[in-house]
Amino acid sequence: MNLPNKLTLLRIILVPVFVALLLLTQIPHSFLWCLIVFIIASVTDLLDGKIARRNNQITDFGKFADPLADKILVMAAFACFVQLGIMGAVPLIIVLFREFAVTSVRLVAASKGNVVSANIWGKAKTVSQIVAIVAVILLQYIIQLITLDVIPLPNGLPDIKVLVYIIDQILIWITVLLTLVSGFIYLKDNKECFKAAK
Image 1 (tube, rainbow, N blue to C red):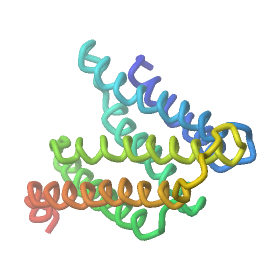
Image 2: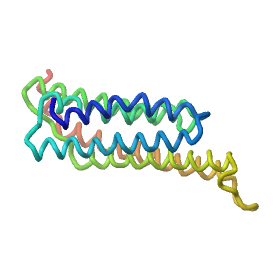
Image 3: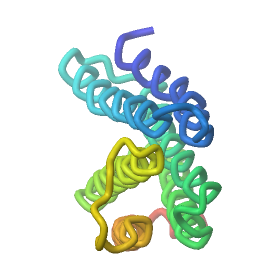
């Protein structure tokens, strides 16, 4: 197995570690640790593609596993956010619906011997998801530090939890909007796949 594929597998292996650290909030500095794990996983996403292209190590396994690993990581984060009450189920359902729809188109195209690559909107969606997840976890860590009195809050400041919740929702819904737009454009640009499926 080549290095890019090993990095992809590492990203998948890191998902349960990330989930455990994100949900076990009783662990000291749990949000910091899960943020570090998420960043490491995201870096492997950047590296595996670059190394595969540079060294001509693109494989069928990599084509399948790389986007799958990305989706598993992002969906795991969003599902944990729902569990923690950071986001509602509706944004998660919208993102899941988009991913299933796009994956279905890719599978139909692959069955015809075609490879459908991601467009600029898909890349923007992925970047927005990573930025949103990093920001949300970082904000939760700040709240964790305030709760532990590591960061003292001056009197007269608005409720920091309310402010963080508002920021979280803005970030999440920006991601959902980009997810919807990228999915619509993706389906529109590949509508011949639906004709081929008839």
